[in-house]
Structures are given as structure tokens and as C-alpha cells.
Length: 196
Image (cartoon, rainbow, N blue to C red; front, side, top):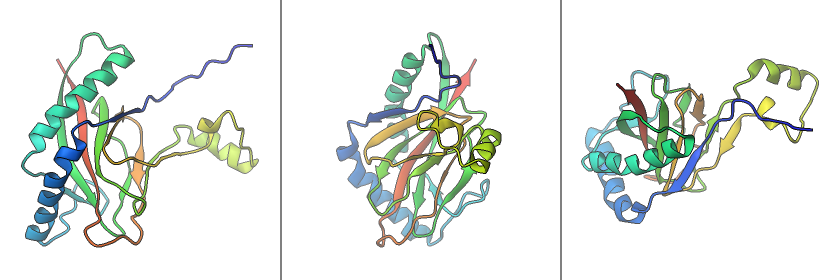
């Protein structure tokens, strides 16, 4: 017997080697940005209440992400591709969240996890088969070797790691529960956009 898996979703996970060096300065800049603006400043394009911002040092970080993007593209077998990136910081305080969304028309989306600990919620990647999921729920079916048919995938992030996935994959961030003051869940988020 032979079984092939169709339509796999490759999730890149790799340590960002400069994490210990860049985190203290960037985290302090982000805290100062929130304090100085004295507002949550949510992104008006989304139905969420997380804090989106840009700070000095962001362009250097974006350049560093190109190494991870290039590694991912090589792994996937891209031999000739040109791309540009766009980036921002997402910060989540108590009760803040990001609704279900994707990053189309970006080819890929990713994030570097700047601050994350046991008080923070994971990222949830949505099941791509909602119709099949309905059948599995109706008949209480949970096949151990076919979880992609019915489950969302919850990824507990690791601080200091980079994650990249196809831009079409729907994902969300559940509300942060009770967290300490200034213990924001912080990610440096980026899109990879193909260029001609």
C-alpha cells in the first residue's frame, strides 16, 4: 500500500541567531512607543485590537529575515525568484487578539518571535477543509493519522525563533489572558511578495 499526502503546508521554523543581541533594545523601543503614543493604535485594516507599529532598527531586522526567507525558498525548490518584503511589529497586551486572516497576495508570510512566554497564546493555523471537518464533527470521528482533515493546528511559539508559511494559510491569535504589565506578546511580522 502507498499513501501520499496532498496539499501539504510547509512551516519553516529556525532560531534567529541574533535574538539575544537585538531583543533588549527593540523591546525597550517598543515599550517606549506605546507609552509615548498613549493609545492602542490598532490597525484599521483588520478587525482586531492588537497594537501595530514601526520603530528604528526595523529595516536591519527585515534584512536579517532574508537569510531565513532564502533558506525556506531553497528548501521548497525555488530556483529563480525575486521578491520584496514588508514588515511591522505586532504587540498583544491583555485581552488583545488577531482575527482569522491570511496575507494574500503575499507569497509567504512569517514572523520573528521577539517576546513570548507561558502567559501568551499560540498562533492557530486554520483547517483548510471546513466541509470535511463538519462531517468529522457530526460523526465524532478523530482518526489519529489524519488530523489535517478536521483539526486546526495550534503552534506554541518559541521566543527567538522565525516562522514562515504560505501567505494563503488562514491563521489567528486568540486573546491574551491575564498577563503581567508590559509583558506583551511581540512578533516582528513580514510578508514576502514576488516581484517581476
